[in-house]
Image (cartoon, rainbow, N blue to C red; front, side, top):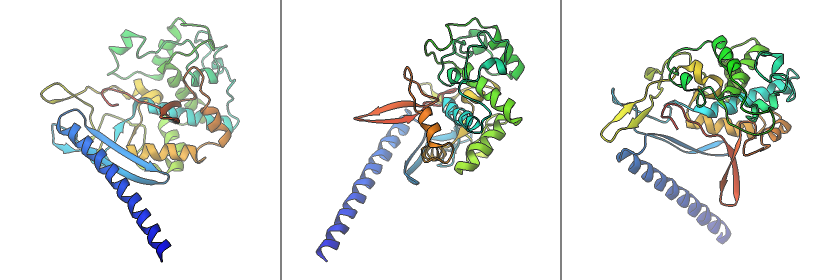
Amino acid sequence: MKKLLLLFVFAFSTFTFAQDKFTRIDSLLNYLNENNKFMGSLTIREGENVVFNKAYGFADVEKGIKADRLTKYKVGSITKTFTAVMIMQLIEEKKLTLQTKLNRFYPKIPNAEKISIYDLLHHRTGIVDYINGDSITRQNIYRFHSKEEMIEKITAYQPLFEPGTKHEYSNSNYNLLGYIIESITKKSYAENVENRIAKKAELTNTYFPQGKINTANNESYSYMFNGETWGKIEEWDNSIAYSAGAIISTPADLTRFMYALFEGKLVKPASLEQMKEIKDGYGKALVQFPFGERRFFGHTGGIENFR
C-alpha cells in the first residue's frame, strides 16, 4: 500500500510540474500578445500526444477573426523538408539517385552536367537564389511566375561557384527539386504533398495552396505591428515560394509531420540517416538546433511576415 501511495504521489507531482510548465508558457505568450509583440500558435508534442496547443491574436485583424488551434499559417522554408522527403521517396523507388545530374531534366542550366540531386538538397550548386539574390525578382514576388519563366530565369544566372565546393542557401535549388518531382511523377506538387506526405502522416491541415489566403478556410493573414496597429503584409504569389516555401499548415500538423518522419512512416531509416547528414551546417532540408547538451533536428521558415 505504501509503495502504491508513493507511486501515486510521484505521478501526481510530475503532472503538477508539467501543468505548471504549460501555465507559465501560456502566461508568457499571453503577455507578449497583449503587448503586441506576438500573434500566432504554439504546439508541443510528446511522442504521439499533443500536450500543449494554443493560439493567440487574430487570423484576420480587420474582421476581428481570432486565431484558434486549427488556424493555418504559411510555413515558409519548412516546405523544403517536405520537398526533401519526397525526393528521398523517389530515390527509394529507384526513380532517382543522389548522383543523378540536373542535366537529365534541365540541360541548359549552367553546370547542369555537374550539379547532382545531392548538391541541390544540400545547397551546394552555385545557383543564384532567385528571391534573395535577384532584386528584379524580389520586386515581382506578388505576381504569377510560370514554371517556364522560372526555369528561364534560373538558366540566365551566372554560377556563383563550382558545384559541390561549398554551401550557399538558395531557394532556386528547392524550386528545381519541386519541378523534378512533378516531372518524374507526372503529378502536381500539390498532389504529391497530399498523397506522399499528408495522407501517410495523417495531416489534416497541411497542403500546397491553390490561391490567395482564405480566412473562411481558417487561414491566417501575415501581419507586422507598426507601433500602433497590426498591419497586413502583402501576399507573395505561390508560384514564387513554390516547393521552397509555400506550404500551409498548423503547428500541430508540423509536429505530427516531424514525428512521422522520425518514426519511419515517410521514409526508411537509411534515408532518414542520409537526411540527417550535416555538411557545412545543412543536411537534406534538416538542420541541427542545440539545446543544452542535446541536439534537435528541424528547419526554420519565413515568408511575408510569418516566422
